[in-house]
Image 1 (tube, helix red, strand yellow):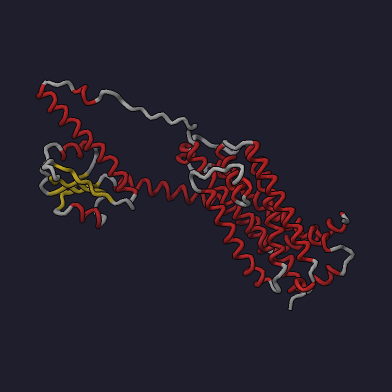
Image 2 (tube, rainbow, N blue to C red):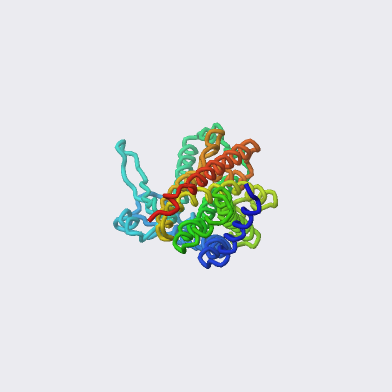
Length: 390
C-alpha cells in the first residue's frame, strides 16, 4: 500500500469537507452550540418545574366537614394551604389542588384516612410525601396520648430503630445517570458528524462524476478506501472530541447549574477523564466511517445515500439508549457489543467506576470491528457493479 497515495486522497477529501457548509454545521457548529444550550435549557426547566411544583404542592383539599380531631391543625402546621371541597377526589382529578384527604370507615369499623394523589404530577408526589409525614405524626401523637392515659410508656412503640446507610459515594447515582445521557449524545453526534462526509465521498462523487477520475489515478482501490475512511473518521472523531470539549466547558462554566452540580457532588471533567473519553470514541469513529462508506457506496445519488444511512442511525440509537438505562452495567460479555460497550464505557468513566479490563476489552473489540468494517468496505469498493450502478 502506497502511503503517499493514501495521504493525497486523505488531504483531498478533507479539503472537500471543509468546503462543504453542511458538513461544517453538523461537525463543528452543532456540537459547540448544542451541548451548552441543552444543559442550559435543562437547568432552566428543572429549576422552573421544581419551583412550580413547590408552590403547587402546598395546596391540598379537605372535606367541608373534616370529622377528625387534630387533622386540620396537623396539616396547617406542616405548611399546607387547606381548600375545603365537597368532593376532594374530584379536586385532585381536576388539578385544582395537588392532593387531598378524606375520612372514611374501614371494613372493621376503624377510621381510614384516604389520601388522593395524581402520580403524573411532580407537585402531587411532593404533597403526598409531606402529607404522609404529617399524618404519621398525628397518628403517633394520638397513640402517645392513648398510652399516657393508660399509664404505658411510649417507649414500647420503638423497641428499636432502623438506620439506612448508603455506601455508594456521594453523587455517584447522579453521575451515572448523566454519564449515560452524555454517552448517548456523544455516540449520536459521532455518527451524525460522519453521515454527510461518508455520503459525499461515495454517492456524492458518483453524482458529480468525479469518481471515475479518482479510479483512473495510480492509487489502488484499497488506498482510495483507506484515504476516504480516514477522512470520514477524522470528521467523526473531531465531532466526538468537540462534544467532549463542549461538555467539559459546560461543566466548568456553570451551564449545568449549581443545583445539578451539588447533586453530583461537584462533578468536574478532569484532564484524565477527557483523555479516556477521547480514547474511548476513537475506534467507534473509525467503525462508523467504515460502515457508512460501505453502505453509501451502493447509492447512486446523495439523496439515496442519506436514505440508506437513516436506518443505520436508528439502529445505533437502540444500544445507545439501552446503555443509558439505570442498572445496566457492562460485563466482559456485554463489553463485546458494539455501540453499547462504548456507551457503557463513557458512563463508567464519568461515574469514576471504570476498570482497566473493561476499557481494554471495549477498546480492542471496537478496533476489531473497525478492521472488519474496513475490509468489507474495500471488498465492496472493488465491485464494478456497485461503483457504476445505473
